[in-house]
Length: 448
Image (cartoon, rainbow, N blue to C red):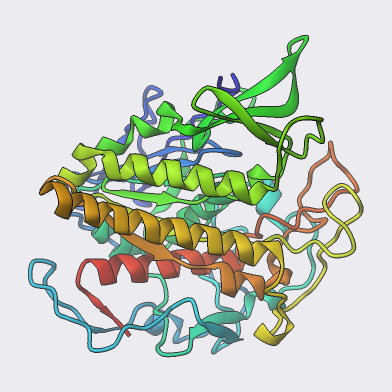
């Protein structure tokens, strides 16, 4: 059963030189950019369990850049020169074999040249949710913006909005995950606003979101009120997202934080255990058990999607991004008030956050192996699904300074801190830098 609350947010980019009517509420909105070139960006943002974000452009894209806002008060005059760097560009039809593969996930945070590493400010990007607009909510320090991620073996190119839009032209991309996936979508919208100004054209009256699950789930209700106790079917994918897969070219999949709650677990129609229920005669599991099962079920469904294989859909796993509560958790006084990154030597890799990342990695590798074996064993030429990874876990474990903390503006939950989501702008913007690098590499473009 789905929660009957909903927000459908269709976001498109508006040419700064023209005004466009929003027209009717539609999930696909076309827009003319440049010389009569239609550009379509559709966005379905289902936070908490399922974020769905479409980028679609049926024709080659011609974009005219606009003069954006300053990147803080005193941006580097040469900042634009460092927007994108690749060693070699090759035709996607004739990919060039890379001489050396760079592990983008292993590295450290270094001071950004010229100070700020941001592409936008909290005022220049108009689509930042208030709960992630940390400066608007009173955050005073800004040094957390002055760092960039430096992989050990190479340089990570800066995000280039026009390049990203060209990469996804005539394609559809969806982000499937929890509210942290929505956080990524909001960051990406701000990054793309470098080239075209985003315009939010529809929200429902209550600004709510539909809750969907990686696997089939139902919240237990008492007198019409949700109990926050869920029945989860570990072997069944939720059709509300699965039915969209055949239409996709890229599926960015992630989840983790949502599974830390009371759940009764079912498989083959029978209850097999529970999480945090402490009930007699029921096997008790930790959240990692459910996370593993959910990803395995989701990945197996993707591998079994014949139409996805025919389209050569690319599935990208974005690994777990940790929370950073200190001296408690969200409802026991936990806080996060650091102002700068920590070194890798200060990170506790024995924590459950790193274990969740390990579970995701194992299920990702299993899915890739099973897809290959299915194709070879059954001579299934339609199973051409490709699997890639955006591994953010190590980098984000070093960024306890990037969360809203007390600066999230929630008037109904005063006194609680948000140490799970990420400020915009902030370290979360590196996720799209990594995503673009992975997409370029997958397309046969060598990353520096």
